[in-house]
Length: 225
Image 1 (cartoon, rainbow, N blue to C red):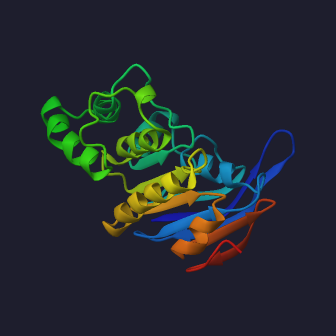
Image 2 (image 1 turned 120 degrees about the vertical axis):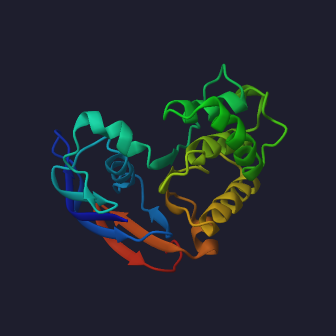
């Protein structure tokens, strides 16, 4: 599904954020991306979402080399991805339903399809009955669930989660991880960058560890350390 082939990312400052990284991720995997601050996790995510292009090397997705993807093709490429951020990035003046529906409208879904799919997605993420509520009326965990609903409503091939539990208390974090586990059990491929040691240790999924831009550990089933 996803392959990084000898990818290096050097910023204009001279800082090497990723150094000759080669990784292959298969369909249906759940992968934790770990490492200290500055290890290269954020750059890794930005390369996956085409916010950055690598200095050298190639990024392959679904059998296609997307490294040199033309700028006008990037929005279409991103439709295959679901992206969940630490800071939610919700439309504050729109309701829960409107936030999720927005993600469907920007890819051209018709109102009929939106009305059919929206209740199913909100029920899946545990937000049934919250359709008309605004983000500032929700808890942090509920806001993150809206973010996840928005990310998965168009059935992405790959779900990318960038520190999704970073602003949440432990109990809420585990509720969110239960939701991600459910999505994974339905076949969704997930890459999650995290500092959550307990989460990684408990879930025992594939772990890729970065240090100074290099892959220093890649285990199919393991913990944080």
